[in-house]
Length: 74
Image (tube, rainbow, N blue to C red; front, top):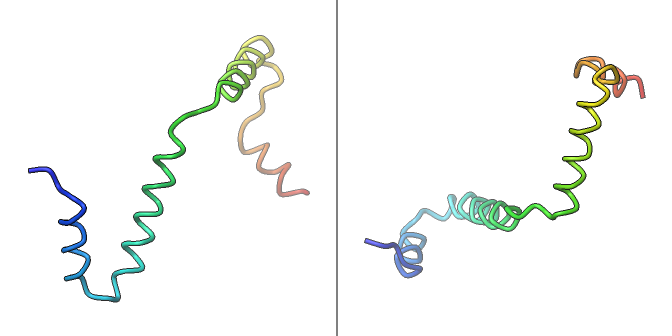
């Protein structure tokens, strides 16, 4: 059986009021992740460029812990 908006509304109406904020937060979270599913082409291109650069110049790579230390110093 497929759930409908009416089913959800019925459940919401029977839910204790103290849970409504949590339900709303979860709905907003779902809306955000569904809108973030498409990665723009420019971003894919940039990631591929960086991967290629790292493969061609492995000597410039640093351990992640070293990078965190650099950030902490700022």
